[in-house]
Length: 311
Image (cartoon, rainbow, N blue to C red; front, side, top):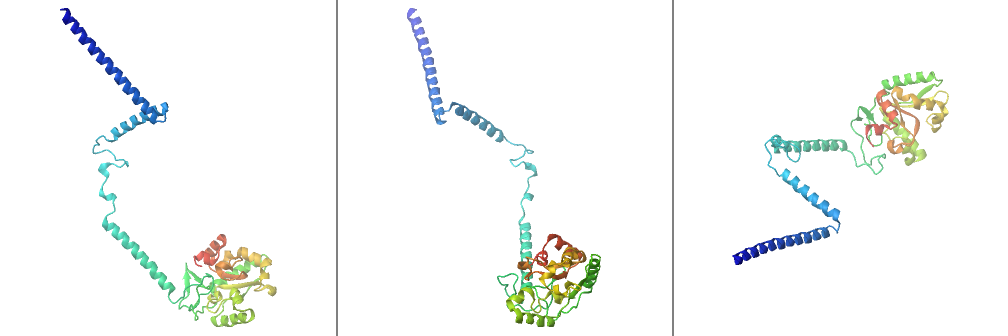
């Protein structure tokens, strides 16, 4: 009996020793793993703990997203799956129609450009200079309902409307208003025919040379006076200031510059705008465009070219 009891006791001790040895081994493995984990995080205990927590949260999030969705669930963009259909994607027919519209619009724009440039040479580097080799058109240029005449857009040689009745009536109202301020205005030059401009321009070229004349006088067919809408304005009994830079310093010129727009006139060639108009400043040269347009041009302090969107 003693031998059997000793054998049972021996087995129990061996089993207990195995559990103890196993526990020690497990503790040793955990200790070694901890040391390695802390080492990979720069031997920073707080960083190692935070990394473990983040990994745990990431695993939880992944498990939640990976769960099967029912028919009414939403995808990652927030759209309901049952509402997502092929209508969100443009059909080939719609794409073809859109492409065709773009082609048609490009074709129209190209046609307009070709029609506008027909019979015209390429503009020079100076946008306000004359276009070399340009021929006079058959029809005058209208932009936004405004008749334009400048170095880029000439008039037909036979265009002869005479002085505009509407512009004359507007000037008479302007002059009557100026009288109440003690200023007596007079339009000393309005409509000029093509033939008269030939004589006038040639006279200036002979006197000052073509380069100088081109800064203050238009070549035949390019003169705004041929439209019948341009009015050279001066003060009665002060003829020495007519068509002269000295007019700009007079009270009449200052009153005119501040009030002409109320009657449909704009200062056609403002100071410092030669790069826009092509002509030097002329304090006496006014152009009739109508009250609404004149009001806009005056308030914005721009030239007719800038208002019309042309060079």
